[in-house]
Image (cartoon, rainbow, N blue to C red):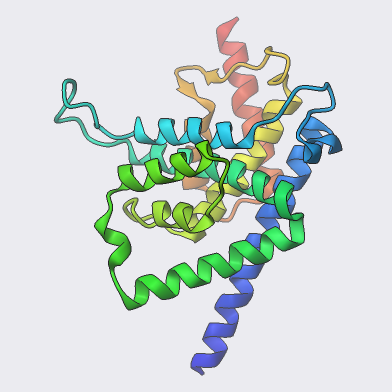
Length: 235
């Protein structure tokens, strides 16, 4: 019975990672052209996934009241922190695909995740460093042109009530939002990121929270409705 449960979990894990990496590959192809794998967009602009990673890490840190001189009693923005983690994951996957190819990247991610989970079940070593320190470790690796998915997995489990399953759900949502952005002028600067009084990330999170079983197509439709309404309200 236990072997069946473990096999089921392994299949679910493989399915999640496979879907995320394949969606990321498609998003990069659609956004930048298939030349992105050589490090340039179809318009000839250089792509630096490592820079994307450490800049998003900085945004993750800003979700927490780290400043000793300002707002020292404010609460961390956990919802935004979770979104920033998923943004980082987009770029970690992109660099892994560039380095290894999509299939090898999937297998590495699965293997690293399983090793990480086995480690934290056996000992609590990973808890000794704070979320900030772990995020800075990922930043430092990116600055030196290195990718270590295990550090990213550590970050996930340092955020309250977060997990790889929640990363998957949010990633699918954010992938859909990124596709929606590209379809509505994000690359040329005509897209409006603030819908009414909320950023599109917040609208996405609200839709996902209210519709846990939503499909990709249904989510895109709801984003379209919300965006169209916000544009009408501005007129």
